[in-house]
Length: 106
Image (cartoon, helix red, strand yellow):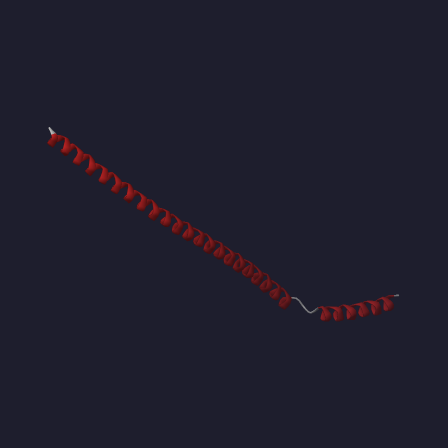
């Protein structure tokens, strides 16, 4: 009779040790997961910053490209259109010719 009671007590002690060991393992896992959680949060924040930086770089590159296209278009217009001074000179000459022809007609 005592032998079975001692066996039951030994079994309870063993179960108690296993429970405490499981609790300790769970606590250690909890700590490791909290550390992992912090690392993941830091990496996500770092990735978010990199994405924002990349978006800013792309936005600036797009603005530069648009400005370059505008400059190219203006350069093309400037090259194809005659100089303003040259046009003023031609207009002045044409006005003189027109006035001299008006004088001749009247």
